[in-house]
Structure formats: structure tokens, C-alpha cells
Image 1 (tube, rainbow, N blue to C red):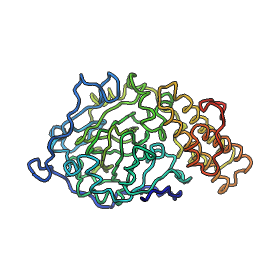
Image 2 (image 1 turned 120 degrees about the vertical axis):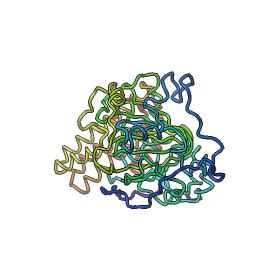
Image 3 (image 1 turned 30 degrees about the horizontal axis):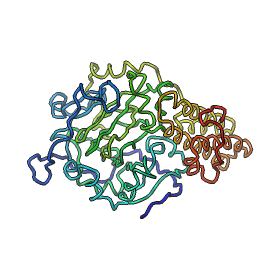
Image 4 (image 1 turned 180 degrees about the horizontal axis):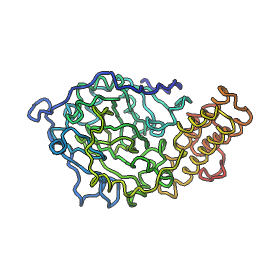
Length: 441
């Protein structure tokens, strides 16, 4: 069995131009085909009286659910200006919907592919693996070997291929592009494979669609520029995994929590540009999607009667340079000429906010162990960033050591196992203090 922690590698940033790799054809699902026909459509969406997958009495989906065919009839090829779900029917189902209706069938076809997997706090969209410090928590294994430990040592490890890696290219013949998006060249393509309780932390990017072959996936959404400090403390953008904060969203209205929606097999979710979003697999799932370029400017169907109600609960504007935007913090340090005092002050503020947010996990009703592991990882990354700046930009060694020792001590106290992976030999023995005590930092 091949199962390796791989050493840190240089980050390859996404190209600015459109995706230039293989693209699957526009699909048309043949419901009469004996080869492709699935015994039944995706599990029907729960009715309003059924219990929500989120464990409260609120609706299971806060965004509109449309028929893709009806949307095209009303709006042509214009995309929605708001998040929505396109319901499962013959216009949304790919060949994969029939070929691999569950994880066992998917592994039978593709389990011998070697993949890389990361825990939720280090996933794409989160910025803590994107600042050239090195992600020591990455696993490389065959998909079957990885899956064999999803209920044990590698619970929470998720395969997310952006730009279409080798596994994605093998799966492509089973996938396709919905007709609505067929003439929009993809900027990137992505394939995501994982068990329940895996997903991506809050992040945002260009417009995107994502289809689900099997399983259920919970989506959490916040409008552009509306990630308030109070909301950020709950959901920990860029780093908190969904299984860490989902419990804290129960029983409170939108605005105090993100918008939520459960995506079912055969459905497609659409997100306009720069909407904050996080995901959490409720079952083992395979998802596939693209970030399409608009073929011409302004190809959005403006529907203020639908879009405005989705925004009204999120009146508080986003803070400037909030603690979770690590890449922007690094850019600020670069603009200052890598001034040591300025840089360490920014990293110290980030470390303190990260630790304070972790310390409040219990009072917020979050999953404490998940949040503490994520915070420990983040603190180790911040320490590694300061060490790099000492080596590359001449930050004073004693000054850096004072800060990094404190951050690594806090990381060890929060979650020594995660600290030992990411801080490696620099991880100290945990202190006896309560890990939620703010005095650690």
C-alpha cells in the first residue's frame, strides 16, 4: 500500500488565461439507453415538512431551485445573477450519473489512480497552503488506499483537482458540460472526490457551476463583500472546515449564519462571481464543474426580485484586510518592503485572531476538535512564514524566534498531532494549560 506524506513543494499558481486542457463534449442524457439508464433519478428533494439535513427546522435550501430547461426557455443562454440549483432531470445528468452511482462503482473504475489529498483546513480556497511555506499535511496514495482509511486515520482527507489532473482526465469521458454553459470557455475545470464530512473552507473566485454524480453536498454561501467579523468568527474563512462550523449555523437565521443549501445527485449548483462559499459532503460524493468565461460582457439575467432578498440579511460590510485573508496580508508586507516590524505585527494580529476564534469554538457550538486542529495548522503556517522572511528578507532572528516560539507553543496546545505534522521538528511539547485559554498567546 502506497501512502506517503509528501514534502513541501513550490506552489504553482493558477494561470490567468483560460484553461487549455481537454474539455468534455456537451452532453445529452439518453433516458432510453439500456447502457446509461439509471434505475431511478436522484433521491428526490425533501419536501418542506421533512427534517432538514442541517438538523433544524429551517429550509434545507435558501436559494432558488430551477428547471434548467425552463430557465433556458425564459432567459436563453444568460446565466443567473444569483446562486441557484438546477434540479436533476435529463438536461443535467451526465454519463457518470449512470456509470458510477456510488463510491464503490467509482473506485472500481478509478481506484488505481494515484491522487493527492488534504484535510479541509488545507484545501484549495483556503490560503494557508498557498503562501510558499509548504503543506506538510498532504497525502499521496492510490484512491483505493486513501478510501480504505477514510473512516480511520485519513478521515477528513479530500481529493480536489483543479485544472484537471490525471484522475480528472480519466473521468472526463463520463462527464460533460450542460448546454447552458456549452459555449462559455472554461477558465478552470475541477473534480472533487471524498467521503462524508469532507469539503472546502470558505473562499471565493470567478463564477462557477458544479454537478454532483452521487451523494449529498451541503453548500454555505455569503454574498460578495458581506463576510462580517461576527460571521467570520463562526465560519473561519479560508481555514475552518465545514464539519467544524456547521453545528454553529443551526437554528439561527441567515445573516447570523450563511445561506445554506443541500445539493442532491444529478443537480447543478451555479454561483456568480465572488460569492463566498464553503462545502461539506453529507455522504461520499463525486462532483465535477467548471469556472466558465463569459463569451461576451454582461451575459447575466438580472433578476433583482430574486437576488435582493438573498442579500438583505447580510447588511454588515466586510472589514478591510480581515485576519483570514493571508495572501493579502503577505501582499501588504511586500508593499512595506518586507519591513520586519510591520510584517511581524501583521502576522501577530493574524495569529491572535486565529487563536481567539479557536478559543470561542465551544461557546459558539462549533466542533472544538476540528476547529483546534485547523487553528494549530494555521499557527504553524504563520510561524513558517516568519521563518522564511527571516531567511529571505533579513528579519531579526531573535525577534522572529520570540514570535514563532509563541505561535508554535499555542499550536501544540491546541492540537499536538497537527502541530507535529505541520511544524514538524519545531513543534514543542504541549503545555498543560487549557487550550482555549487566551493566555497561550
